[in-house]
Image (cartoon, rainbow, N blue to C red):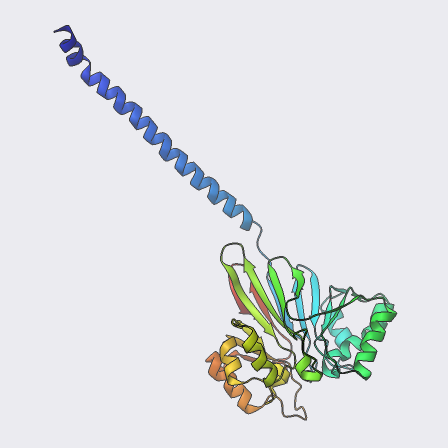
Length: 315
Ligand SMILES: [Zn+2]
């Protein structure tokens, strides 16, 4: 009877207590989960709290030739240096470039290495610093290669030779891979062009945007590259050999499938670059003729690679 009463007296308070404990436990779990969510959110946010800086890729108007300036947080590098007598030193000075982490000469043709040949005076006067010279395995020797190496020797600029598989550092989160030439091949002139794939690599999503720099690589080189690299897709393609008909095979262009195409080319050049057929192929693969940018028509132009966003033309 007593037990029964106790049971009968206590059941309500007993059950209530149990429910209250359960409720507190449940709340604690919920708050714990919420806090950890908030905490992880904060951790994620803190990685992005400082506004990210874009990596800027500028195709400099150097007449008939190629010079692509990379810029990130006040640091600079140059893929090809355009021809000599194209005012590259003035162009760099007007953009506030006092130091180049590296200058890459894709191959030893004057419209790509000429600007580097002229850098001596600027280095001598302290106007410009060049920390490194990058070259490929171009077998062509002559005036341009001699002059390029002379400048490097005279101003004690270390020289690195690139081949497929090498990576070049420029900025954190930006991977620059050398896709060409292969070490076992011996190529001269256009086919020797150093090809770089530059990818913005995000903390979460992996490869976010990419640019493909091909120098003057010809169609035969493009075909070999397609055999070697399964993924050649890039948002921006530097069109090979100034839009010559000897480059930009349709199959290659469709493998790259660029959203934008950039051509370094001189106004009214004597080669008739870029060829209409190439411009037409670019229109087909980009799906938009206004996605083809040319230094002869637009002057210097830039694209920005924004971390977490992608590649956009700079307005
Ligand atoms: Zn060229």
